Length: 359
Image (cartoon, rainbow, N blue to C red):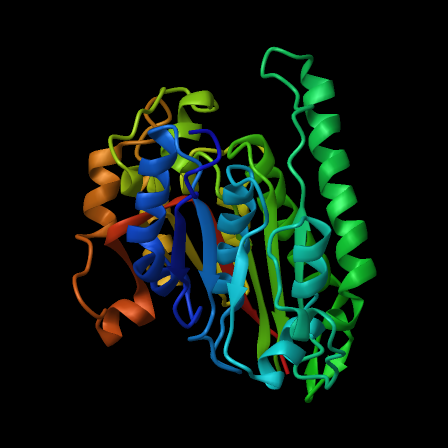
């Protein structure tokens, strides 16, 4: 009988949101169940459980991955999911400070408890932190379009992002803080790298981009996340190398995606810029992740200059990167870089980079 059955509600525990692997681990089974029910023609509702988050233990990458996932899932639910919370004014103040409440309200992502949505949360928990969301537009250029139009579109998206970045996050780029000097050159490098990653989310991921930025006394962290097609699928649209490369899995796709663009500004140059400034890059897509540190990146760079005819040799590069670590990475791996395969995957692509600020 029409209207007699109630929609299934799926609770999704996001965990502590202290990193992307943690978010993936806690949500994987529930997300899989949601997809199964939806593909069966049902319209399950979602209830996001944030009761395990703690003040000062959330990472911007974990938060950005969560918002990117929630943004995609909202398209498949009839109404905004309810949020379950533990009462913690410090957490609410932090979310207010980083614009999480504002972003989620603008896009109708959640149904907040009335006591939280009506509250006024202040406190400068970390004023040098910000969360941004850039909508995906279907009005994307096609590869067959005029090359100049293609370049103009990418330049316009980059410039729009940089304008918003400096407008909303100008305080993150103060020239001096805690005895460390944030130069104009370093500021521009952060903006250019971040804007390139946002372009990639829209162009190759066909998805909105969620950006989390955090400035500390030691450096700046930027996380750009989407819930789109991921590296493996999007690489089939790219033919920018002399040799067409088809990676067989998500780890190979991350390796190839990091290196394939040698002709224009792209992910390879973003990573190179971060490495030259003493930083690190964490990339993940579905069930694979790579931690790029200077030692591993330099080895892989050397491995790509064998011949001009074959710039990408997947098998050789996999050996250079090394076998995926199992369990906790060793101190050597943390210092030099490593890759890993997760038991459960998470749709989309996530790239976070950290840059130290010189004294």
